[in-house]
Length: 457
Image 1: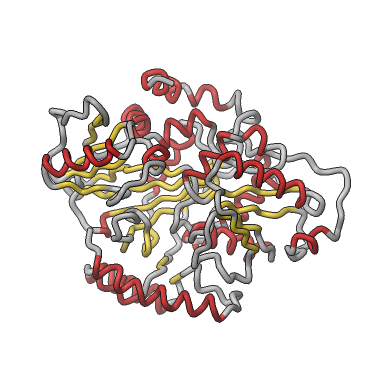
Image 2: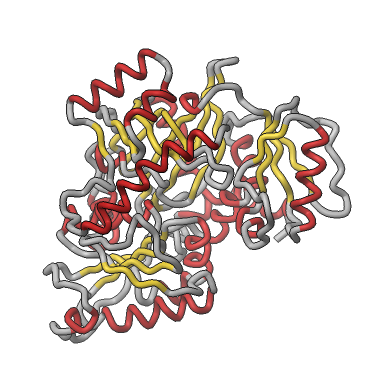
């Protein structure tokens, strides 16, 4: 689809979404039909303990996102989700609350779809309904691409393919923001390839450079590949463009002004938009610390909840207006130069640190189950819950949080939340019984000090 046509399509999403509410991936969360008969013994064959529920979550991915979603289901329903991934990770290995299956080539689209279908055929002998939860952009894309076939077996609530292209391809997304009067950093598009010349309207250095098409970018690996580049001058920009172009990436690059401020100027917002297009819960937080390793910039490790109803309502209205569905995670930075929030991107899934929404009172698993399994969306008439409960989320040692928070006010707030029992770490789960898992988590905790000493941002 051409760029101009796609942008036009994005602007007509609001008009189309009501027509497509029950037909498209993001318009009603696909529902599977109950099977005619059930074998009460299949759970023994699959090794998945019987929780007594008539549904089972199937989670794709093995990272922190996958673990805390599994924990949400286990805490709410005493159910052990099935977790599928292409490689083991510390977060989901040796866990007592989930069942893990590793499938080496799961990023292959055909294999993923066939695996999900064969898994569903086995599980449907015991469970009436299967919930499908993706934990990264790549898996979301594969689910959306194959929504028609997967919806015969699973319930899920994701955006349509058209909205996905509007949101996930950043050049389209920033145009969408401008048209909806959402503040963004000063941004220009740089075409990679034969005509990769530096635009005359390039923002003043330093600048932030990132791929417009993440799917294509991560399919072309190269040494020194980063999630985001902070570049100080035109020479660094030219060299970065050259290396990226030589990798085979041929789409555009996003070049943005660098908004001054450390990690504490970053903000995060999580929303859940139900299958009928109404927002059910919103959480907002100030970042205290993010990963500083080049391949992990943007992965949040510590944050504290905040409340800004006006801005929360503004982004919520934006999401609903463009036809968003499911969990969304907004990345934001506060610009102290003009006192405004600048939207950086919108992820079409729950984020790595979105567990703080559960800690504030809206269990993320319950939102999905009430919407898709229990079909409560049509009966809910109240407005979205805008959370303001004080919560500290952190997966790193407290001393690191205190060191990088730096501001005296934030340090006192972190200590107060910690001492008052308002601090949460989804990995600290009393239901986990494996000593091997505990040992590995302690080692990872210690290694965080080394990671932050060796990497700066």
